[in-house]
Image 1 (cartoon, rainbow, N blue to C red):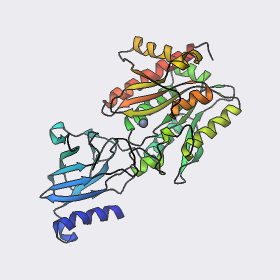
Image 2 (cartoon, rainbow, N blue to C red; image 1 turned 90 degrees about the vertical axis):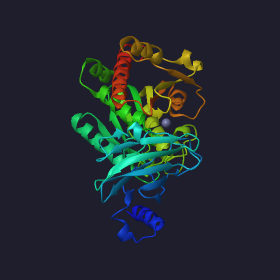
Image 3 (cartoon, helix red, strand yellow; image 1 turned 180 degrees about the vertical axis):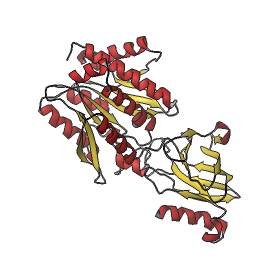
Image 4 (cartoon, rainbow, N blue to C red; image 1 turned 120 degrees about the vertical axis):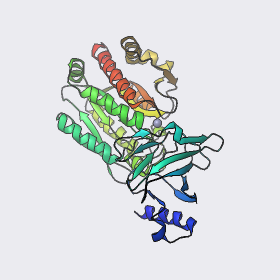
Length: 384
Ligand SMILES: [Zn+2]
């Protein structure tokens, strides 16, 4: 609540009235929840405000995450500028009153100045708190609630504390692990906090499809273990970071040096599992880009060595659905997560990228189709 009071007083200072009096007229801004990001607010005129948003760590790529609540004692419309300093507006604001159901702001109610990067919003505020965020807010608590519900539904999932975060919080893995099964796939999600469309929505739909009860999935789980890291960067998600973990490190550039507890945790866990005889056959790492959806795949150097999952999976998707797959090649020397899987375990891997503003139902549908065709591909493979 401290930050909220600080912000509230900033609003009041600019209006040169006492805190108590001004509260009946001014909008009140809230940052008292996990995932919030709002650096300061200024009142610039009658019902006009500017919200300043800056990253926790620099350098940082252009992922200007923002998330805050607003209320006012009387219902009215306000004009709110989102000012990112030297950065530019990227995400279409999403609005919610319960932090569960979200809608994009009406296109008539947002204007973007492409030269300054400032977005100007018209918002209807009232005594009921309105949440405004770059994407749907998914804090660690939200992901862990989903995890716990999944555990009730699927008793074969084993939830383990695989390590600690920078802030010394538990970091979890979910295992569907059968002693008699050697072949294993790995899913990693949300290294980058703002990347909720791919890192949370697509990931959950993909994983739930792997767990579902029908022939292709049942056959798949009779042949493959599934190790999952549903939220690799919980500190960053709860801090409202644009990109980094709590040490200011981009985790998806740390898969060669392993300087951070989150990446070290995955390496230690998988090193142990493979020492016990498990074989990692494929890995997916879930992200979001302004130019998604696409898959990042390893470059041609690796084609001779691989088990031809990707060359069979992609045509299956395209032949059996209306989805077209854009596969972008990257060199395997980069310190990205999926390269780690090839370089350490000799398995194919992809970075699964969704797009910032892709319709959420379409994201879920795509993840389900990709997951189904992924399982069908692996079920048929003679290479494992
Ligand atoms: Zn990412």
